[in-house]
Length: 236
Image 1 (cartoon, rainbow, N blue to C red):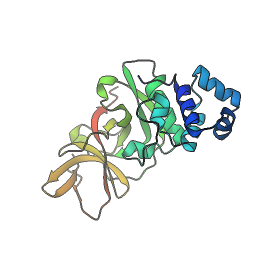
Image 2 (image 1 turned 135 degrees about the vertical axis):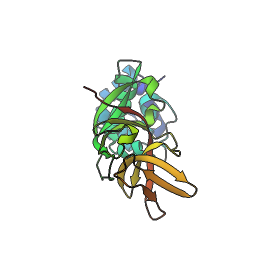
Image 3 (image 1 turned 60 degrees about the vertical axis):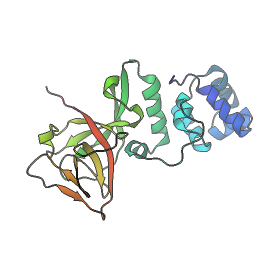
Image 4 (image 1 turned 180 degrees about the horizontal axis):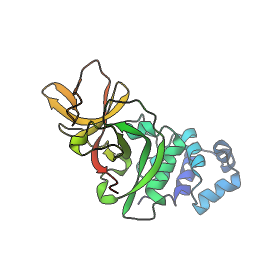
């Protein structure tokens, strides 16, 4: 069961694995020995900056630390758009707390909405801070840890029903297949297009006759970053 209530037990497990006293461990993560004792015995979850300090200073996996899922040891490397963009450990911890604990409605799942828009037009470069979390019905989200949301900008995908300002729900766990609408990075710039595969050739296809298809060549840095599974639009 996903929870943060027993995070104190996992903190204690880390400390014992490292062979540290409460005073030594507390000094490393930046709290008092008494506060650490409260974490371990009462189970109240520390603030995200303390959890981030544990994450940075010890070889532990953030998801395991928050939920008990998986193993204690930190996974080597990272893959996928969401892992890359959650480049702040504090932000990652906050995301896990929101996803697995803070949401008060058991029928919804928090999904991070990034501030920048993805180009439904010429590809655009962008940075990626989290703007908010969308509480979406659980039936919409097959892979909560690997789903994110972005806004579309431009008109190259109007034929697919994607308009300026629409929110795209993206699942990067799904392997992109021919005819999927995907988010892709091309030479470091992000865009939303329909993926087409014709033999050995790969294309990113717009859904607007005013735009030309982009053939993906071997000289390009092409990185599929998820399949668009839902489009959310305000109608009034």
